[in-house]
Image 1 (cartoon, rainbow, N blue to C red):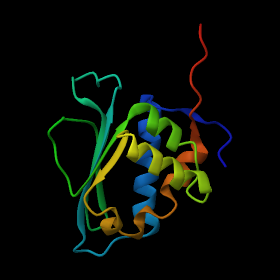
Image 2 (tube, one colour):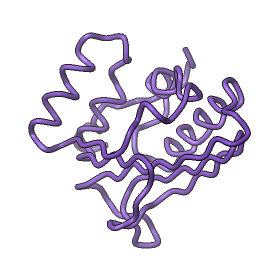
Image 3 (cartoon, helix red, strand yellow):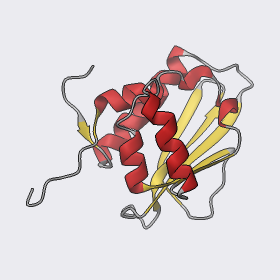
Image 4 (spheres, one colour):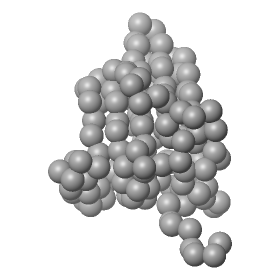
Length: 147
């Protein structure tokens, strides 16, 4: 586990997400003809400096991953995750092996706070371990009043 955690939702945190995704592609390179795209769009979050919604987009072609911070409300991809900002903060603190992860996703889905469109299973094995490494490196605590 990394000794210093990065606060969730900061620019440094999105750099961490990009880094872990790129490392995932290096660890488990997809086939040369593999192509996919993913958007994570966070509702109820501050917009980015350029007016885009909070979240990110990745495009993968073979073993090349492109990452962009900020997404539009109408942008599409092979897989689109739409989630409440607070829902993502909670989920990024729970490792995948924790039984509470699936239960939390199910509850948030029922509440309309978390949806996935597209076939996430088609993303490939490059994603293996990425969530847990992001989890290990993230400080997902809410800021204390006055700090």
